[in-house]
Length: 493
Image (tube, rainbow, N blue to C red; front, side, top):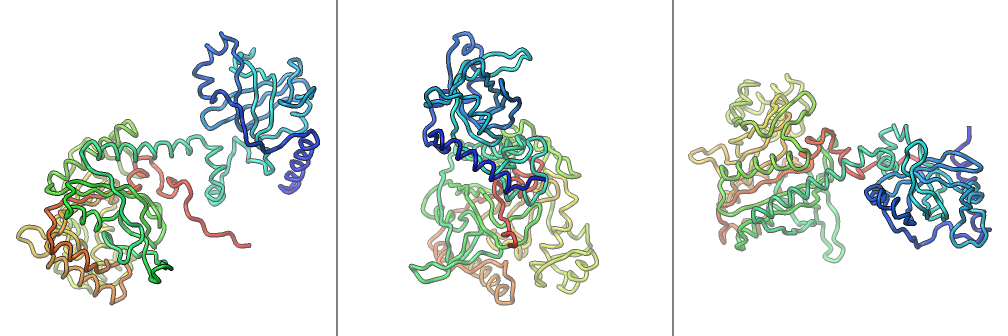
């Protein structure tokens, strides 16, 4: 069996053949006149006018020998057949009196990028094609690409060589056009609703807006440690509410130094929005409209199947009370049960959890319960201990005004009636600080400057955020598959 290195050597020899004929195997200029998609769209007019065109692309297949070659080339817009026939006396562009077909036969391989000139025609078998009059190499490939039918089957190899994976799998490639559409539709939705797009810092002295273990790095100029943000500028966007901006939103990357799963990655895209003077009920209607718009405009439906769950975003969105639901499913009252009782129940249920404090165990019990909820649903009335940035529920000292969107047993959106009482916020962040001191690496850091802003006054504010997990759910894939280049460990040498 021929090794990859042997195949590379053969192709390197072909580069030398090109050089001997005065040909650069990697020219910087192409004279393409049409994308292949355009050729297909205008084929009848191009054939009728007998207009010569120039197209370019990667050779994806190569058939024939001697007097005629058939090849499919691909330029990222479409795949199209070219036909090189000795009867046409094809030449190599720019090489006087060259025998083009002979040079093609000697040097061309699947994977090469070429440019051809000629007229369109339809073969006897009915295949739309370009009848090649001249050709030239644009990029000589040295390493062969995998078989276009079988592609890359090993997942590790697919992610490491994503450029080949996407080249060979059109359906997977189209996923990222859909993902771009998803964020474009989301952006258009917020612009239409008069939200201002903003940019907030990625490097922070303290991380805020979520509970997650951050990545730490060092700022050389200031000689201090900083963190990569874990939210899309929640505490910064709230400062903008205090500054008099009525509505803001940001789409950006966030970083969380946590474990990986089908629903979790360390780096991903989130959207967060904030609206002054908007209440939680108005926010629910905004979120329902947003999710239904994403379903219709990106996927053409509001009905989805994710795992064993089916849901329709156009259905009635039910409300699920956080405390009552956990008590119904587990018998644990997270507001009044002791840590020992909660730990015992988690062990009984076989739930793995990190951190033996009440906050982490409360969250773990909820995550156990949510798996059976198909949605669409709003989870409401979260305990303060898991919602350090939400307003207290009116007349309730233990629960807050917030909701989470639940679809297919997972959380795919979180909203708050944002806490703007500086004294209470100061006390809640102190509680989080105590959790950090006890070893909880996901608790929220204290931000005195944020509290100082609240002392100056922030209006009643609705805040909402969701991440690309929602896209993955709607697309029926994992968040890892929905990333162009997921992080990979280096191979062992």
